[in-house]
Amino acid sequence: MSVRRRPDMTPASAAPGGGLAPPPAPSAGTGGPARRLRYRAGDGSVIGRWWGSVDHLMLVTVALLAIIGVVLILAAGPPAAQRIDAQIFHFVRRQMVFVPLGLVLLFAVSLLSPRGVRRLAVIGFGGMLGLLALTPLIGPEINGATRWLTLAGFTLQPSEIVKPFFAVVVAWMLAAGAQSEEVPGLAISMGLAVVVAGLLLSQPDVGMTLVIAAIWCAQVFMAGLSLVWVGLIAVLGLAGVVAAYFLFPHVSYRVDRFLDPESGDNYQIIQSMKAFTEGGLFGRGPGEGRVKENLPDAHTDFIFAVAGEEFGLLLCLLVVALFAGLIIRALVRAQDTRDLFIMLAVGGLSVQLAMQTIINMASSLNLMPTKGMTLPFLSYGGSSMVGVALATGMILALTRRRGRTEERP
View 1 (cartoon, helix red, strand yellow):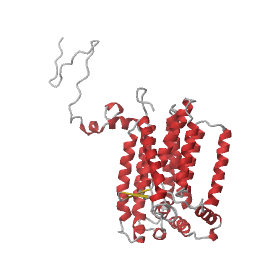
View 2 (cartoon, rainbow, N blue to C red; view 1 turned 60 degrees about the horizontal axis):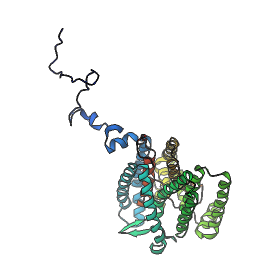
View 3 (tube, rainbow, N blue to C red; view 1 turned 180 degrees about the horizontal axis):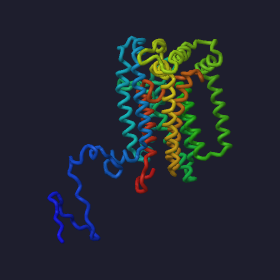
View 4 (cartoon, one colour; view 1 turned 90 degrees about the vertical axis):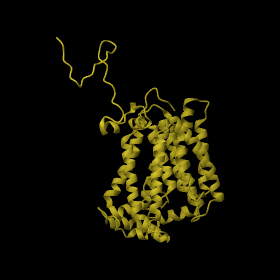
């Protein structure tokens, strides 16, 4: 009995084993929007492989933080520009350049393999060490500190950018030392930490030095250092904090003001706390904040206070939840790997983001002595955006899912 074939049917070619071969792939431009927008890890394209292996939850979290940061700069930027007699949207326009550039850098770094991340970190770390050494020599002195360089018309703060590179290089040294007794990984990493800390203290920048020390201590702890060494490092760290109090007048001044508010000028922290009080639960509304007009660093170090005044406690809690979710997610993904280098690098980069976030928020809420440190993705600043984009891009790159045949670190 014969089967009549419909006009729209085409003869099927025989496949090995007597079965039918699959229908031919649709030609380019067909298949509708769904097919054109679909990217899978097996598509073969760079974007397809990236999209199929990157952590989507961390991507969404970063996008939300970037959007919140733009909204807050729109609120805090104009009053800050008026205080320095600049054009009203001076900081807003500049931040609208920094944010896209930072996101592009984040995406580009997230495409790298673990080996590519390590190579980028080694090159970047060497370059930043050179700039850190030059900063006290040729950089301008601002508020008693020399932390910035002017290069080709752009102001750069090398201490913001050296942190992610430092975390990855230390992770490489510790992992290499754990794999081979011939590599003195711990000693090399300790030497690098001492060099970076010395260059930072020469500026002086005690806050950044504490962040670098926290990154190194966390990575050494994760690498399996004995409890005796952990205790010794803790004692040395406490001794360093006490020494900073006596050696650096600005440190002792801020600590004294924190312990005894009547001992000095607390104008900024008073205005910051007033902003949170005025905002209440739901905030005064976008653009309705008034305390920000009297807060000198509202667009940088005290951007969290602007969030509290205009959008209230709810947005502040959302920001805290987003940062906590990003860091916890990164650490969970790092635990899924058996590669010590990836685990240590992601751990160090996560500590960097966590320390910056905690110091900025705690300073704004008068939970610790004030310290000029930006809030990742939210505060104004090109150097800060580059440093945070590098750190987050490296985390995304190192936590991507990889097959057995893909390149190892």
